[in-house]
Image (cartoon, rainbow, N blue to C red; front, side):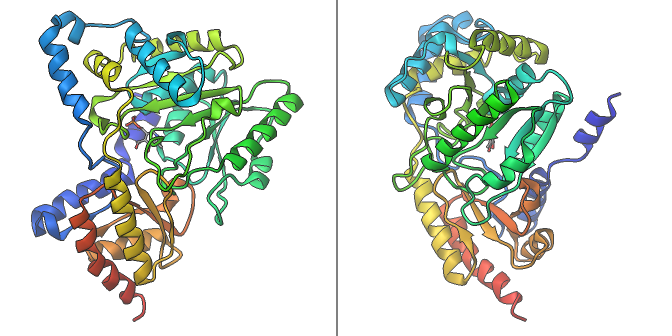
Length: 395
Ligand code: PLP
């Protein structure tokens, strides 16, 4: 048996642990007495287009079309629809040949890493704070996972730290904006600076360094913050996308990889993704949902709900006295722990039936993450508990 896999399967992620704890607490105290901010499960229903399309597809097509295999890289019409949607948004000229359909962002990332990594010396960098599963996905390919420490003032990219971490073995850097867990949208200036920095490093090391742009929260963005289309700023960019959050379909496992023509070795890279999909047994993303995406690629769920929740929780917590990073996108709030050890703070919060995730898991110390994709009633009811938690530190 593979001992690393045994270890991975035995050590459940802290988020899953907390989710299980919350279920037990809810059974004991009642649903409305537990304020669970642990899991990033969209709380807004899918756009109407989704259920209408499902009915339409299964009513008007034969089962092989609706439920059968598609080509390994995905149905042609679906990939056309996605390319067209992107071209309208970003004034690009993508074609279906640039799109590879996947089972969500997790598969998009795993396939991309597998397609790029050649040896254990290869390094893939993530910018803290970062989505915890990156480490698992990168190490699953045998490559080395390295972290660029956070810029704790802006939560944008810390270039002094990046300069220290990058080496000639760096294959790629993951950029996740809007960011899980900080809720920050990286500024265009920051991304242009990253692009120039990497161009210099590519020259110095004489090989391409890819940006792997993980953007499942692309459409969840507030107050005119703009999520830059990174391939328009930096040629060697691969986009890993998913409809899990934008269309509230996390359980349906549907997303794609975009490999623009401008990307170094793009045709071979696409073929390597096909190979990685085969090696992982990920061929053919769910067929029914590919067809749904063909019809709904231009839609999103109602993002106003997240904005309302964002305001409710950010204002509620800062009024109590908590220090929070103001979320510009996604549905996460990064809040300063009231003691240095965020695990201890998490344990204290549990005593008030509040469930939050310590930031150590995201590569930063001293914060907790709150996923506010919950009902507004949960947020409103949680505020007195947050106040009591805050006051408990004055005693
Ligand atoms: N990347 C980030 C930043 C995420 O937050 C998530 C899920 O929460 C994923 C990737 C995985 O997304 P999916 O469910 O589409 O695989």
